[in-house]
Every structure is written in C-alpha cells, then in structure tokens.
Image (cartoon, rainbow, N blue to C red):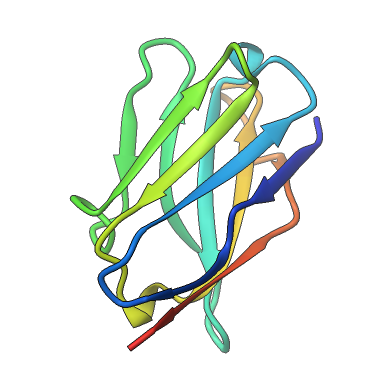
Length: 118
C-alpha cells in the first residue's frame, strides 16, 4: 500500500485547509486509515482515524470539533478537513493505514507540511 498526502501549506490562524491522502489500493479494503502529525522538536502524535466498515471516527482532544476525517472509497482517498486552525497545529501531517484490526499502523505516507501563522 502506498499513501501520498497532499494539501499542506501556509494559512493564517483561524483559517482552513483540507489535506488529501491518495491510496494505491482500494480504501474500502483497508481496515482503518488515519492522520498523525509531528511538530518541530516533538514526537509524532495521533490526530484522528476512520474505520472501514461503519466509518467510525476518532479524534485527539486537541482537534476535536475543528478537524473532520472522511474517506471517499470511490476515489481511494482519505481527507482531513481542518478548520479554525491554530499556530499549535503547525506540523508535518502524515496519513497512515492499518490493514487489519489486529495489527498496528503498518503503512505510512510521506508527510505534508502545514504552517499556521499567528
């Protein structure tokens, strides 16, 4: 599985961005897909995820209510809609895939940089 994230850029605080993650396989075959981020000097952290079957979503408390994850199985693409962005959201964002419910996040894409200016 290859994942390619895109859509990062520079945005002012309070603004919005939508990240995309194109998968090389049918996203309907992937158990769970998600987004992680890594800010400068910090460890990578979980942002949110969405499961295959019923599309259940989970979010980190820091983004809950501002970020929305969705997946378009027809386009084999995962999205992250980010609203009300804050400077502390500045990070490299990575998409990831968990192929089955018993494993870890076993596929990772190259990141896309999001910079939020104050």
